[in-house]
Amino acid sequence: MKYLNSYKNFENMESDSMRREECDRCKQPPINNTTTLSKFNKQVICMPCKEKEQKHPKYRTACDAEEEAIRNGDFNYPGRFHRIGLPEGL
Image (cartoon, rainbow, N blue to C red; front, side, top):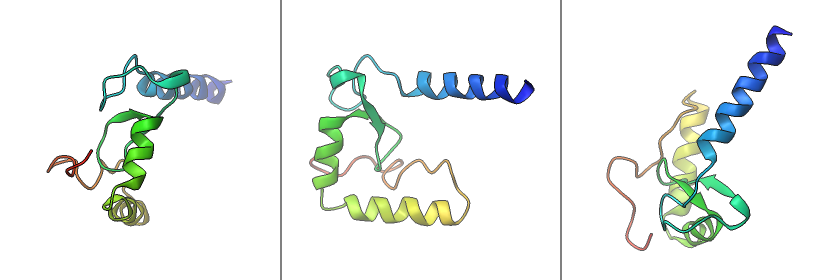
């Protein structure tokens, strides 16, 4: 029972942290309330912004950096461009 309560708390924490009235990037309401995390920084973004992000020339670099961080045990990696800002075009 103890683990079930912990799981419910975790589930609520996750869903609350991803829930947005508007996209952190474009400030539009998410379509079907669907959001995801950016590979470039800590923003919670809508799916149209994610599609734009995936087409960016530096997207593969951001993905590779995140994968490397995870291999090194960093499961809270803030994104390749977290400190320096988004690349031009996003």
